[in-house]
Amino acid sequence: MELTSEIKVNGRQKFSSNITSFALYTLLQEYLGSDLELIHTRYKSSESLLTFETDQSTTIHKEFYQHCEKSEFLESYHSYAASVIKPYFQDTKYVDCGPLLIQRIPSFRVQVPNNIAVAEFHKDADYSHNVYETNIFLPFTDAINTSTVWAETKAGSGDYKPLNTKLNELWVWDGANCLHGNKVNSTGMSRVSFDFRILPKKYYVEGNTKISVTAGKKMIIGDYWIEF
Ligand SMILES: [Fe+2]
Image (tube, rainbow, N blue to C red; front, top):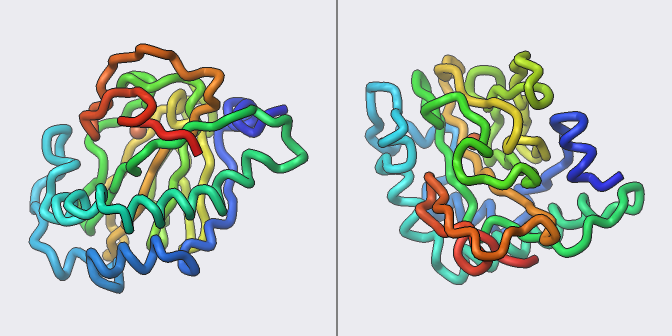
């Protein structure tokens, strides 16, 4: 079976991320400060819960997204994905699913204490996403219990379990089809993470002019997607 198909059957699978040994981790610390789990002490953040309108536009998001089109950032993200993520999809225990597309710029999430990172419980297919996408949840801090994503263990199961992640771990999971969202973070620490999507190119729909809701990008190769 292809890894992408197995994730649709099993909902989620945890892998090693080894993120702290990559330039991507160091760059993020340069942009946002080291001790990412204490990022809330360096930026003024909203006292009220984030909403659909505000969850991508806090001062921390604005800081990150100013850097995300820089070549140093794009190169470090794509080189990380090519060396760590791609091999998981090419492991010989899986059937090769052929050429892959990756989200060109990752979605950036921060969940500070007493808040959420993403406003509503949803599945990504509700928002312009292809049901054949597979999600990567890559935290730059620990992401445990109320500071992580809660998701159905498989599409339609209705049982929500946390994507508990220690630094240097990641999840490959079915965010396109499993309902997911956040609880209010009561851990006292911030979670900083990327999420991004992988799509086997054979499922790419040419001429899809839908717009991604978080990034405002057209779901086409060159804007939302890139081959890798
Ligand atoms: Fe989502």
